[in-house]
Image (cartoon, rainbow over all chains, first blue to last red; front, top):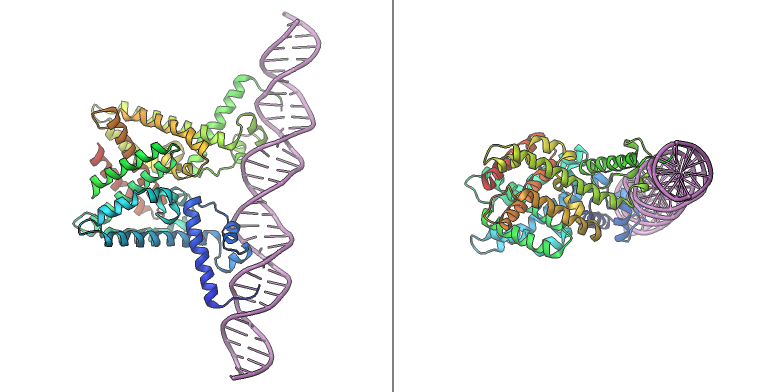
Length: 192
Length: 192
DNA sequence: TGTACATCAGTGAACGCGCGTTCACTGATGTAC
DNA sequence: TGTACATCAGTGAACGCGCGTTCACTGATGTAC
């Protein structure tokens, strides 16, 4: 197949990125390049016209994930009634929808431990991505100073991510339900 | 090589289990059977005299992990001065040692998301393991009733696990240090 | 207590399979004049 | 505006490698008499 126009090339690049960011979140970082490309109707050879390596794709896909989730939570906060932004964020983060759809939500409960095992080069590049996510949502946190709000963001989000990861690890549906409800009530009480 | 005595066979079984439980925690569930056996001076073919499949090994190794960590935290709680058991547990869980040595500590911050992606059969078998871990440590939690203490265990441990997983994902050492200290102070304040 | 035989822990080669990456090739797109 | 040529997105085969699992074989251990 022949060369493509610059706009088509850019579109393909974005399609790979978006699909990878969904697949990594729902299936983990071990998702294969051949599978990703096949899902898009492409062959694996063409991948390297868009990314230097799988690690490169991973960094870009995770960055996109944090951007998507940041934007989504920002919108939820903005649409909430006055003074209810933080409550809305917590309810959304600990919702049934987030539990059931890792692919369109936060990367942390899906991939945090795997990111921790990535090469240092990858993790350094993701630091700024995560700090940007924190910056974007800190404004909705409790606290007098920006620093205090940033700290509360770290505590709230790492806590909710841990809760969601634990709930997802349970097999029994009833157990999952009870644990998710418990976590939601707790974080609303402590942070909202 | 010939057949081994029943005691030697049992020892080898335990050696595989213990090593696997360390390796899964430090490198993730993708650790290979050939590597595990080689580390113990054995060849991969012999693995199937001890376990039916890798999934079987995984379940047993994770079960051992929770038992080890449960026992370890229990001892820390028992050795603590009167009324300091919970404080001692939180300080140990959010210690530099836990941050740096996933292989000998809690499975949750290392593997919770990966467990969530395992076949249902595996997850169902791990439910009881995790509930036993909860049962064992709930007695040190705040709360009037056993149920309340169990709930506080879930919230505290999923929160601390999430914090540890996030801290481990950071590349920058300074950032890690600050985030770990922040989490420790927070959980001591909220739960101790 | 001694002998004959069945059991099975561990080896090492092989199974089919999937991985990330490379590469010669194609032909439409983009560019230079 | 039209022509000649360079570029490069995508294909499909191949690279070396590692995966989980199976299997014939070995010989000391365990067992039955």
